[in-house]
Length: 148
Image (cartoon, rainbow, N blue to C red; front, side, top):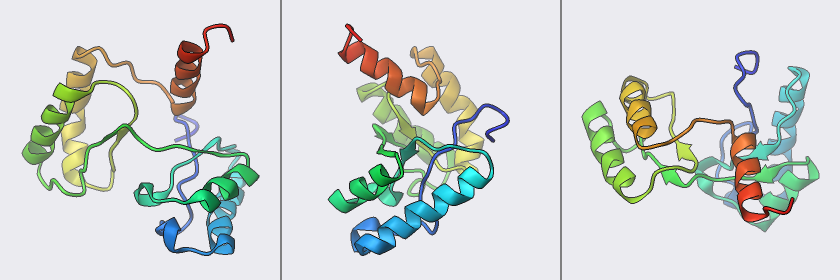
């Protein structure tokens, strides 16, 4: 993935709900993943907690590894919508409200993989550009801090 130009970041080692972990367990989840990715020559910049669940200790544990906690702006909820039609119907409603930002999809669901070409085409037609998370964050920072 990294060789193809995709950004690879930290999402934890075992995908737990971080709100139910001790300080040391949270650190271990993040650190184990950092070591694994670094052994592959990847230097992650961001941490997305599983399920979007985190607490202040998660933010501190991520920061100790030089990571910024990041979430999404639009959740496809593809774990909930088990057909291409259901997923597209849900997203069509979401796209009427908000286009752009960070979209959350899971490639482990075959219906999501099947729906992605149409979804990406629809997003592009609505003006979306597809960039890495680092590019998105940099653009957002430049837009909110034009003097930098």
